[in-house]
Structure formats: C-alpha cells, structure tokens
Amino acid sequence: MTAARKAEAVTREIRACFNRMAALGDRLHRDLGVTTAMRAVMETLAEHGEQTVPAIARTKSVTRQHIQVLLNRLVAAKLAATRPNPADKRSPLAGLTDAGRTLFARMREREKAVFADLTRALGDADLDATLAALAALRTFLDRALEKGEADVRTDRTR
Image 1 (spheres, rainbow, N blue to C red):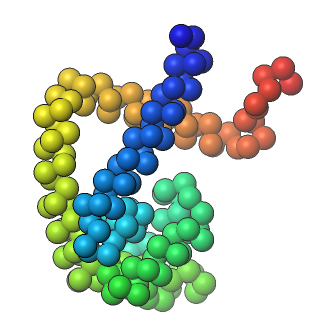
Image 2: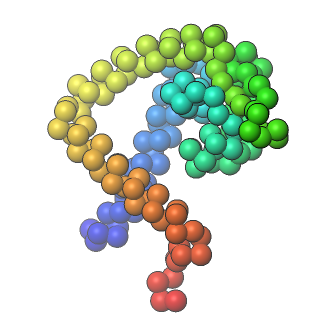
Image 3: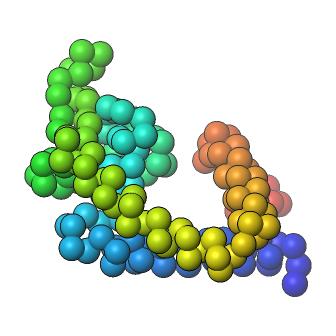
C-alpha cells in the first residue's frame, strides 16, 4: 500500500471511529436527553467557562449555526444559560447552569467505565502511540486550515 493510500485509510478509520464514538456516547447518555454533540458543547463550557457561540464554533471547527442549535437545546433543557456580553452586544455569553454542571459531572462519571475498558483493550503503549499520531495529524490539519482554501489544491499540477 502506498503512503498516500495509507493516509487515506487513516482518514477513513478516523471517520469510522468518530461515528462509532458518537453512537456509543448517544447510547450511553440516551436516558439523560443529551446527544454526543450537545455533550461536546457542555465539555467546552465546563473546561473553558463562558464563551460566545462563535468562539465555541471556532474551537470545534464547525459552523456557528451548528453550535447555536446545540446551545438552544441545552438552554431549553436548562443545562445552559446565556447572559449579555459586555464586549459584544450581538454575541451573548453562554455557560453551564448548576444543573448542567451536575449533569456533565454525572456523564463524565459514566464514561469512566468506557475509558477503563479502552485502556484494557489497547494498553498504554498503543494509547501513547495513538495520542502521538493524532496530535501530529491535528497539527498538520491546523496548518493546512491556516493556509486557507486558496492554498488547498486537489490537482497538484497547477
């Protein structure tokens, strides 16, 4: 297999793992009424405090509209709240409510069993190698995104 084919296979495996992780998270937290996507927004707010929707979207490399839909669901469930942002009248600050922080802690507790199973299945050496490879991949992707769309070529002959 060529190096280019290996790189392509890596991206396919990452997508497959991402989809399965989302499905597992949805199943794990189904009774709580929180999807994996909503959980990701909760995690950002839990780890980094109040933020605007555009800031969360930039962190996750997704659209502002996508984050807004998820935040609206969290607000409707009383797991998050917004307040006026003194720095930007059009972008309120969003944060977890007490109920949101409590529920997120409960979710993290549930996830510990999955992480323990993963640790047993892969072992320290594989986990270390995976972390290093994924960090290098993220760095590459961040650099590619920083260059902008104009620099991303699908046809190298140009």
